Length: 168
Image (cartoon, rainbow, N blue to C red; front, side):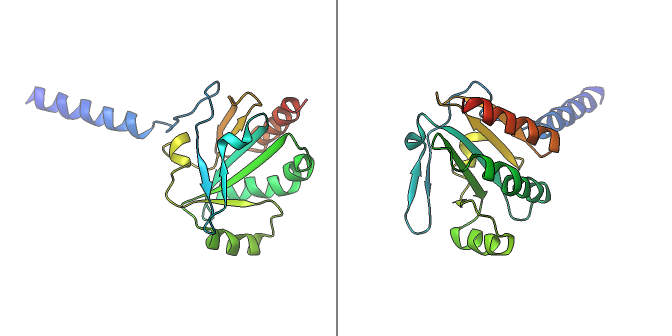
């Protein structure tokens, strides 16, 4: 009976430890994974086309409250500051959303930056297993220089500083 109880307890601890895994696949220092964003209309953006640029990749969902806060900050602070820099590219990717859903969402929110679909988590799945919002900053060399999950004002301010420094 003691062996059975010990086995059950160990299984529970293993399950809890696994459930608390942060779901990271890509970490700071890793190379940006290869991907291609394909819109419903067939337009494509490949990671290879971003070579030599500082790239901000943000994964969100329309139903996610922290994502809403973060995207509001992107609209208010980040996008106006960096949108005209030819060495900067921002990809705000709707996890499990279509172009049509993102267009309807953007109509309601009034964002001036583009939103890209990731209907089947194909792109998200190359970066992480779970948890949104997720943000990755890729340096000109194609390596991840920042990886964040969730949203706080302090982390967002730090991200803004990292983008500015990376573009110098």
